[in-house]
Length: 134
Image (cartoon, helix red, strand yellow):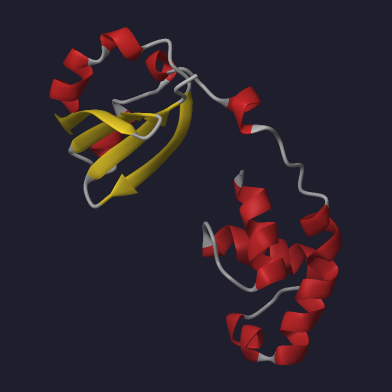
């Protein structure tokens, strides 16, 4: 999901995902005017935003995850440190195959480089990677 799609989902559902700035910018765009944050407390405004974002919401393109996945070797692990992450946990399917400090784990998993990443997540300061098992 990109930033614009997150803004659309936020506007339509009323549940913020992603950046408030992006959602606010999108809401102002569909309203055709400046929108003050205190206006989001008014039910009528929220309903109007929902109504105006409905078309964009139902037209978000859903793609097969497999078609957009990258291989483990293509992932930019060097970006994790800037995000304050220290640990790495790697799963193949449901089985955890490696866990520890990022640098240490990367040293023991080169045989998994060609595996596609199915999903990623964070758990406290640990980055969790789930690889496709098939």
